[in-house]
Length: 133
Image 1 (cartoon, helix red, strand yellow):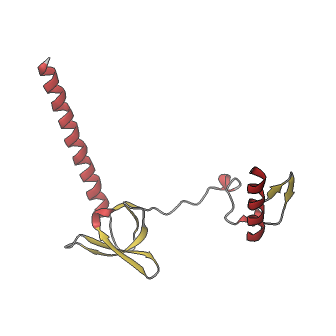
Image 2 (image 1 turned 120 degrees about the horizontal axis):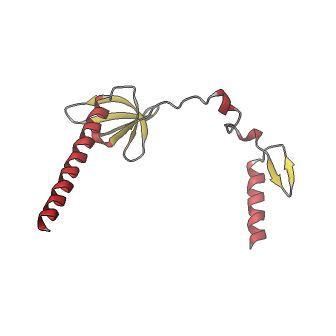
Image 3 (image 1 turned 45 degrees about the vertical axis):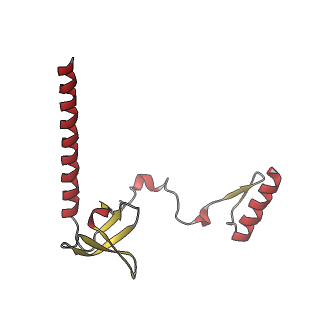
């Protein structure tokens, strides 16, 4: 019984070391792809473009938006962001439009074709809140 327990413990430790080694290899492969101009995501959710890499200090300078730079630790960069693929022609008909001007609002069963203004939206939402109370 105790031999079986030690064998299970040995297998568990072996699998743990194997997983750690695989994770380290993936991280090394990711960091080898770092270069200025690459779009990346950090472990805390910031998206940016690599501007400079300091190998000695293990730092990466990211441009978060034009003129806004952030210096972070190299290991905080966890993902290279690939550009989004264009929708295929078959799926283009079912795609949601980027602008809200083509959307229709339903109010009281009728369909309005003109988009709501901000004031109209606030008034409608306030009126709905009063009806529920």
